[in-house]
Every structure is written in C-alpha cells, then in structure tokens.
Image (cartoon, rainbow, N blue to C red; front, side, top):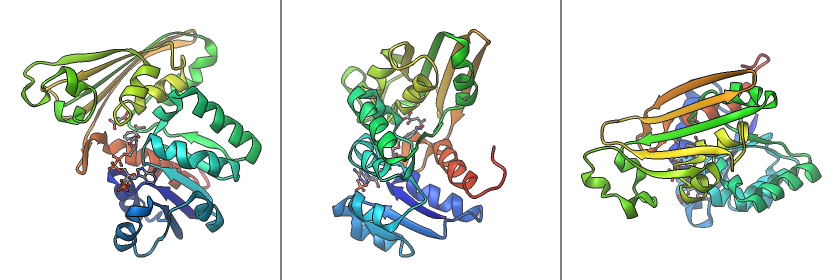
Length: 265
Ligand SMILES: NC(=O)C1=CN([C@@H]2O[C@H](COP(=O)(O)OP(=O)(O)OC[C@H]3O[C@@H](n4cnc5c(N)ncnc54)[C@H](OP(=O)(O)O)[C@@H]3O)[C@@H](O)[C@H]2O)C=CC1
Ligand SMILES: O=C([O-])CC(=O)C(=O)O
C-alpha cells in the first residue's frame, strides 16, 4: 500500500508507530506537510517522501490519504484530493460544519471519483447510530467531558479559570454545528455523531470541563425508531496532546489496516 498522510503531530506520529508495531506499515509513505515543517518532518521520517502541495501528493499516486492535521488542512487539501480520485479518511470531521465546505467536498468527490471516509475517531457507537438513522431519529445527545487542561486554547478559557477549577463546569450547550465550529480541536466527535445520525442542527451537545476526570469522556445517547442506546467511552489522552484521545489513532489505524486485509471489521 502507498499511504498519504496529512499531519505529523500527536496522531500522525502515533499512527505511524501503531502501523509498524502491527506489521502493517505501508510499503510507501508520502507526507504532505506545511512548507515550513518539511525539513523537520524529513528528519523525523527519513523513509517517507515529504511534499508540501496537494499536486505533488497526487502526483505520487497514493492509494489512500489519511488526514490528521486540523480543519484548515481539510479545507486546503481534501477537495483537491477527492477531485483527483483519491480516497481520503479524515479525522477533522468538524470541518464539515461549514456547509459550504461540506458541499465542496461532495462536489469534488462526485466529479473526481474520490471517496470521503469519516473516521469514527475517539467515539464509539457510530456504526449502530448510522445503521439506525434510516429508522428515524428522535433524539441524539452528545456530552464531551475532559479534564480542564484539555480545554486550554479553546473558548472555554474565556468563561472558566481552567487552572483553578474545583467543580465540573458545563461551559457549552448548543448544536453540533456550533460546537464543531467553535471547538475545532475538541468537538470533532460531536460532528461525527451528528453526521451519523440526526445532522448538525438536530444533535444536542454539551461540553464539560471536569477536574474529577483524568480521561477524555464521550457520552452518546440515541433514541431512534428501531432502537435506543447509551454509550460512554473513556479515552486516554495522547502524550503529545491531552485533548486528543489515543483511541483516535487506533480508529485511523483500523481504516489503514482494513484496506490491507481480505476480511474487514
Ligand atoms: N475525530 C476525532 O475523534 C478527533 C479528531 N482530531 C482532529 O485531528 C487533528 C490533529 O490532532 P493532533 O495530531 O492531536 O494535533 P497536533 O497539533 O498534535 O498535530 C497537527 C499536525 O498537523 C499539521 N498541520 C496543521 N495544519 C496543516 C496543514 N494545513 N497542512 C499540513 N499539515 C498541517 C501540523 O503541522 P505543523 O507542525 O506544521 O503545525 C501538525 O503536524 C485535530 O486538530 C482535530 O481536528 C483530533 C482528535 C480526535
Ligand atoms: O480525542 C478526543 O477525545 C475528541 C476530540 O478531541 C475531538 O472530538 O476533536
């Protein structure tokens, strides 16, 4: 397999390690980095080819591209890849809360033949929620609960003293569209839950800073025509980035490994 990778931060680095450990490292790896980061990534990953434009990545001919870089990277790179017929698995799903970008991705995929795969990322139950959606969704509620330090750098900082929080604080309630737009590094899961089920504007989201938890906790509550479920995931934060659950790395690794297997699950 020839894998294209966008993003070599907390997720990208661990993804590479997991694939190697599982004996499923791609035969070829091409990394799309920002121009200013090319030299650093080349030093860290001498076995990979490192490029800084979508055109150069497309010219290398990857079988699959995985994005783990952020909303801006989806906006900048993914339409061009889909338009060139490349299958893309993305982690920064909240980028699709921008309806214009969502439509652009759809158009590019249709025109070029690329397929956009939305990874389940740090959350679980996406399979059942997506399966139940055609039976009619009554309600979908998502609560994202993380230790205070995981909300640093987000708008939560404007309303909470994250360093001195002594009790849990629900600092956001609203739609998945608002959550994904305002918390781009923390509410991609809200977008995934929304796109699997009731959509961005009918999925209810609460975001909580909780000094009583050490793990990133995701709770999803679904009421649908064919059934209902409540699920709670407790994910360990990545060493390089506490707001990112390590489970996200494994969800992306699963996508890559499944494309190299005769039987997938
Ligand atoms: N769906 C889910 O469950 C989750 C999704 N995510 C998404 O994954 C993203 C990455 O997470 P994480 O690895 O922890 O973040 P990091 O900040 O650790 O790493 C981000 C990496 O992406 C690179 N990057 C940023 N913008 C671009 C760009 N336009 N083109 C190419 N490379 C770029 C950065 O490079 P540089 O060094 O040059 O800045 C850096 O290497 C998050 O921002 C979020 O959107 C994260 C967690 C869970
Ligand atoms: O990794 C997580 O726990 C979830 C996350 O950051 C996101 O949804 O963007």
